Length: 192
Image 1 (tube, rainbow, N blue to C red):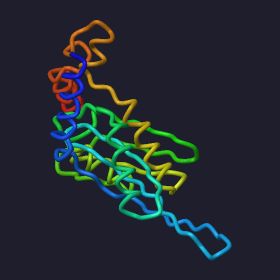
Image 2 (cartoon, one colour):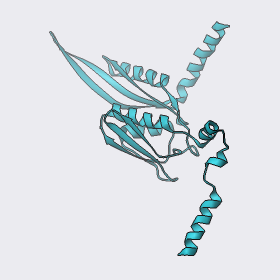
Image 3 (cartoon, rainbow, N blue to C red):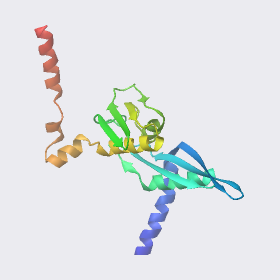
Image 4 (cartoon, rainbow, N blue to C red):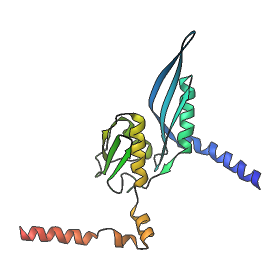
């Protein structure tokens, strides 16, 4: 029984591999001075996602660049998180994420806005499958901290369905009613 489960798990990993897209965010070359000269090593930062609401990041270090990228990609696949998207294109609500001195602000955007984000944050949103978002990075420009802050903010996101379930209510009770919004705008127009 256990062997069958393991086989099934291994087969699933092979099937899942092609569906993930990855984006190399940064490569850092470090050198160590030794008696005979210098030894170079490489650190890679990679973001992986299925562009349908799952994303993860990883870092890998090795003597060669391809090996560092491979290690980072494997770590990213192990650390993936799921994020609920509104209409499959944007975030449900505005949020902030923090890590160290890095702070990021992410806001929902109307359709057609596109991804307004800087380098490392853009990679996370593209791999996540977000099509419309406005974001700003404040503080640290270190790509590692920017990605960690972005992931921190995305972990805080909650969909109306999850909030309703947590409160024991219906989704309709939580979301603002469309009719009320129309009535309010009609009252404002009448008063003017």
